[in-house]
Length: 334
Image (tube, rainbow, N blue to C red; front, side, top):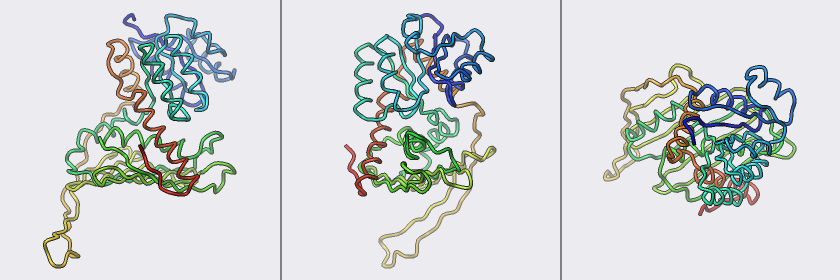
């Protein structure tokens, strides 16, 4: 590989143009191809990036031996086929979340990548979000982690091919995996088809982890307001992450409750209420940070922060959610 990463982007609907913009902005990357089936999507790229080669057939990209990375921003049910073709043509891939629609497909892609000595990147963008990265820096101040409580709701666009869990919960699953080195033990998902005729549009997920850590995730397309809020509780301190708050996205609270079990009556706990710390957050687009990281990994053969195994772990949780919804009970995680 030269000192320039040659990139192709497949899928130019909502997310694909953002991938084009960010990779094209890097000094050591160049977007060579943009692919989509819809003429108006291709036309938008042509207006802004006249030097990019446009195509409706992604297999044209596979014939070009100079392409180092193919970004796949197509519907989830197409990820496996396109990624498989790219890997077998010697291309590294960046796959939009979720990586695949089944664990079986994810495992096959990882095997192919290993066989061809190629890299799989999965677009878990929140892992590269400056607020989440800051939480990772200060997470030890919390002491032993106790819980993760997320609310990700909006009056959202009803999806045709995935339910609200597959659409929104991958963000929280990837954040959990990035922040905590804890093994999930079981989960239960409860959802409703309130407006969507076929798929769940509102859901609650509870995940039990080792060390008595618990996570709750609420996702919905049917909220009158947009909420992107996470509370993380620890034995010593607590964190509030409000992604809709432009000025104070993260607050570290010196708050908690202590119970002395040696006393005869334990129902008089001691409440702590100390200072609130608001750390400075870098104002940088997460996708730009992610693109820089991917290019660096390719140019210097580094291990991706979010690789195929990270993508697979999220798909495992999504599959377990589907099973729990179907069977109406808690599901054990292997």
